[in-house]
Length: 287
Image 1: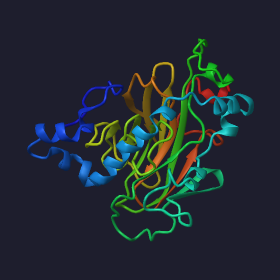
Image 2: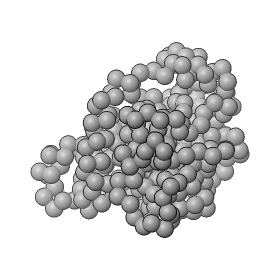
Image 3: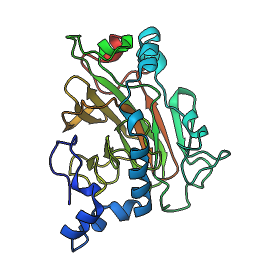
């Protein structure tokens, strides 16, 4: 069963596996994607992870907010690779010597750099790379969790797919932090994602997502637009708006993220380079 409403602050039915099985005698969950795209073990580990770190997820990131307030958004935010050094957050398929992803200059992310790109489909190699700093209201970048600014701003970042095999699925979106590194954006609680293979949008959705936009692949540039005041999330493709994906995403503090389920090379642009999409009231202009 798909989560066909936009109220993702409520836990969707797809997270109650026993309930889902009872109302889904034809095993629609399997056909829509929970077990096609990832194993049930991955789903269960994701649930346990969120429960274990639930108090950290809702803690206001004061130090990170202050750092952006002092240095500026564009000069501060980047993809966090150091999180993989912590065994608690390392991908189950990775090791201290072979990480799930690595970063090169200008935030070029290489997913599974130690795996042959022609190795074919891989099971449970789904990986998410998360931004180092949160996407907050402008007034919160002084380190206080207060919403006293009248300035309506938009956070935005883009990814450009440089290399990926035809069978590799990629995703762009938002998630809380910490987030299970082995779950794609949108698959686990408190995350949203726009996926490359079928163009579906996902929000806290471990099934097949919802029909949304075109698929995308090597050479495409995909963007994620987030308005923290309203919680609206919109995605772009090659400089054009695909459409509003979700609204009301205001309860938690969200971080940019990008995912892939196999070897891929993706460049992430947080504003160092010009965007393909002409974004109004971009947060990087104000902080």
